[in-house]
Length: 348
Image (cartoon, rainbow, N blue to C red):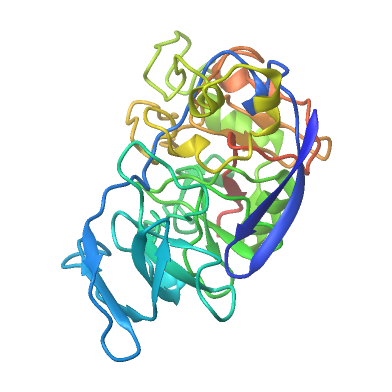
């Protein structure tokens, strides 16, 4: 086991020393095969204009209908020309903010095109969830939640925004010490790379709480206590529940032991055929309509000893089948590419 230092710029530059454990058959560290998908995916969809006065403009494809022009000082990332702007403005499709290439505070970053599709820049911080909002809640639940007997649960795995500014956060980096808030919406890239205590704080900032073990199991198994969210018979591929090659093996092109200390690498969840956006597996739904409780990302519960449940897109069986999958080998400060969460709350 080796300790790795991973730095995440969210609203401020925050660094967190995380203990990224060797593969042990549970969590992100198992060697059974896996991977993730890229939503921040490369490809240049616009090109920055030439310098005009003191600034340059980037325009082109993204940021909603019609795209958005960005104005700022020119910058460059590995020969990719960009514009220095507040990171939250860099929402053009195929572009991402990259820290360390612009003068000024940490929030001013180089908004530049991502590398060609199939490649990943580990310094770039794509913001695929910019502009997403939660759907209204039902039966007295907060937005983004569904009712499960006497409590509410997020319909989808959580993504993050800064709190209280509500700026977008890259789901491929640990948030460090930044203050963040959980949200739940269809089409979001869910937040991996998060510890239990960070997930707990994100839920609290949303007026919710991290689900406890009993709440999580009830949400996944439904009133009939199914083994899987959709029933008692395993239907491989109904959920995002398997991948032929582990993402670390694929990305680092090695199966040597050292790769298991690199499970916080931001590119692992940007590989093809891995992490799915929320709601991408419509049949992976619980009785009450919560998605992806099995597979996609491990989900932390509020267990003080440290527990995450449901398996992830590499494995949903080593530590128990489907809803019964539980990893208890890590403490509450652990995080890697496979660790996510969702929130619970009391109805009004």
